[in-house]
Image (cartoon, rainbow, N blue to C red; front, side, top):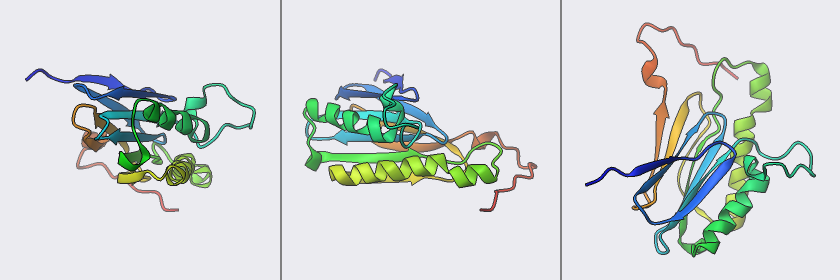
Length: 172
């Protein structure tokens, strides 16, 4: 069987497509990724969000970067391709604290705020969440197989830690 094509969804963008041998993927740290699939219509997509909302209400530059302005057109494009709210399921990942973390990172909690905003929008759309893995201190890869509708969330980078590393998890 031929290998499936992989399509990387870059930060601040999304991709929606029909059933085909393609895997959509996003590498996430503080960013939040949302994969959605409708098994009946055979339509799915993935959005890679950077922030919860624009800094100013009139900021329309790269709307896809923000949960509040990028998620609604992403969902609408799924509906435009034939998906329906009662048939779609979602998988959400990311929103971690990564790298050297300090008190400001905990106070701002950009990834946590983005994940929270996504959950508010998911609730408004009445979308069922099948998998959810947000927060923590590790990066991950979110994947959506457009042929099968399968979601996966895999940690990335943790395997590079040697057993003799004295890693300390920051305490809030």
